[in-house]
Length: 609
Ligand code: AGP
Image (cartoon, rainbow, N blue to C red; front, side, top):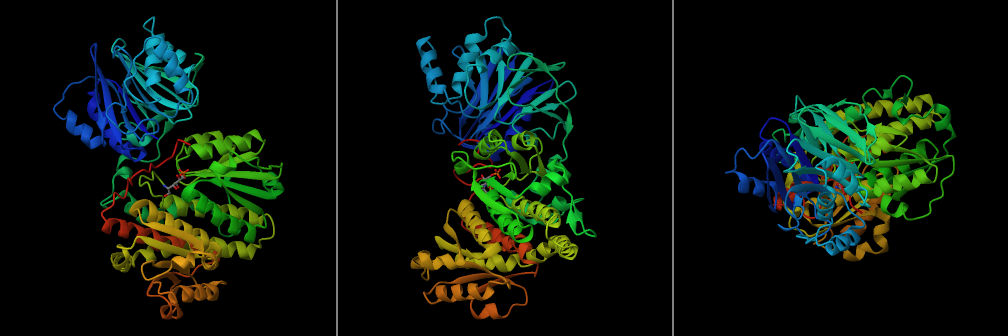
């Protein structure tokens, strides 16, 4: 996944482009580049490394033009290098292209173009776009040349194109990769997501697949790839520039962990009906009778979103009496799933752009399923291509390791459970209890934050270890998986999450004094069983970090360290038990000096398969 920014207007383009790339670095950061048109000259600056390296390269440059495109890359074809960095140019370097996506037929196109005398400068798939546009740019109409070029492309793209021979137009087009257009006062912006342009304008339009936009200095025109004129609604962005700042924290991840007292509130705002003991989710776009007919739900997701879905399975089966399956999107899309008219498919995705989840959504739709989305990014592909859904309203999640999105997903699924449960066997009183417990969660989360220093102390003790086991049962088995993923992805420590009882069927062979276990041992129906598992680990010399229910003294006899969370109902306990695991992973990674917000090899949204 990559980040794209484009600008056309009356200002110097360079500062706008470089600042936009910084905001998009979470999308990929192994190389970066900028192309600018000034009068009839096209200049390209690019290199391996992060945007800051590019900025250093360009700091002496001034007045490079008021039209430009820029790109920060997450390598898919061709290793991170100067030659593979975007922008890519055509043969005579008269035009430049930046691309986010995957061109499935690039080898065929590359061979065909080579036979026509084209010499390629990179190993990337994206470069073929530059040469195709150059090939079709015969009458000076850049928009027409791009439309024609994209008709040869199979695969996904979000692109920006500029040409020295067309100094008054910026072209954008998309299929399968996001592209948002900022509408300014006599200036226009192009970006992979709005965080790159919100400082300049809050008026945006979201291009749809197979849309192309021609941005000129006085106006714009949008068409389909076969040149049919189309129009778009202008949206107003809900967030502002300072929501993107780190807010005084060392990392976006810590800021986003600490935001959860508010983001959980935002996820339930206007949706919890305490007196009736139910919830309202108008965005589902399904009438109550349709929801009543549902007897099976399939959740499809990846990574942390898949863990949230797994918690949802426990919630919905226990409290709504609906059969639930949880599928990895990458597996679901290639299986032959059975979907009948009473099956509802939910795709869960913070970014709304994860390629596997998008593909799984389309596969479910091909089978006639009603597919709903649970997303965070407004206007994202999944949000726009599903029948309906529920936004998290968590604000931009910049840290690659998902935290606030996870608890917001759990909150939304809790609301869904309440709504569907109260349409079935969940009583008014039970509904009121759940609604009240949900309303209490934000202040309970705030209480856990008070143990941040204790968690940091534990992190210092265990940061040197290179293997961890995370154990949990019932609602907290998925939380064990999530805690392990958090540690893995930001500290590069090998951590495995397991159902606590399953540990006896293999992983216990790994236990020794050098492999600590983090065990979620809340005062619930499986507490005694978890204590037995803790004793099995201790008997093999394993150290125990327990997540326990406040006031539980018994646990102190069994665990070396205890982090307490407030008491809540079982279905909501993951919203609390995950908080110490997020903080533990964060502090261990910080102590190990890891790149927390942009971990190696990862990207915030995996828009490639
Ligand atoms: C979570 O910390 C990871 N960054 C990753 O597993 C992520 O949850 C996954 O890629 C799914 O992303 P999505 O929710 O945007 O679809």
